[in-house]
Length: 166
Image 1: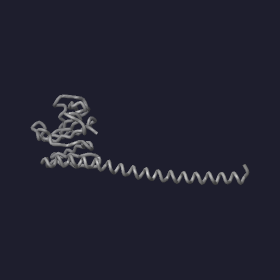
Image 2 (image 1 turned 30 degrees about the vertical axis):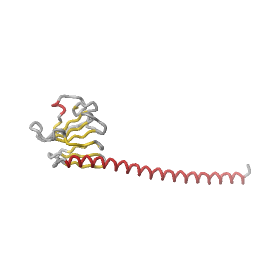
Image 3 (image 1 turned 180 degrees about the vertical axis):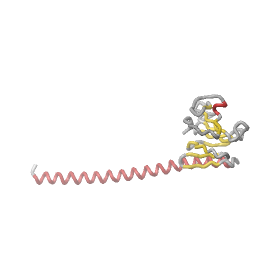
Image 4 (image 1 turned 135 degrees about the vertical axis):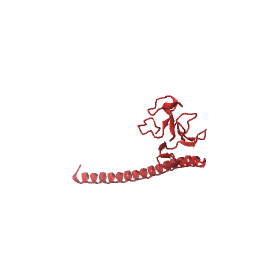
């Protein structure tokens, strides 16, 4: 190949590479825009689910408990000041006995995947929480099925709680 032909080939190759780079840049921008739209839609759906749970609980007259939806979950603060971080999307309702709140993972039935945040009692003057695993068993803070006394976690408990649903 002569010098002129080689130079022309390099020019054509450079032009082709520049065009490919422009197309890739445009596709990356489209992908980023679409990803942002999807994230916004998903966050909106989560916020609506959290808001729905908050409305259901507060409309049942559960004040002075505060239920605060956010983009990452629902925060429930009891009259004693304990705040629980309920996983985003979990459905909230008033407990069957009317003395607390229940949050349950969507699609779960019975006591499966359930959090109970209960009002004060004589045994638990600041209230308590109870977590049930995917099998409906009440568990201690470490996720082990235990007795009633070991699975009623007082609101003033401040240690680690690795079994709290995420």
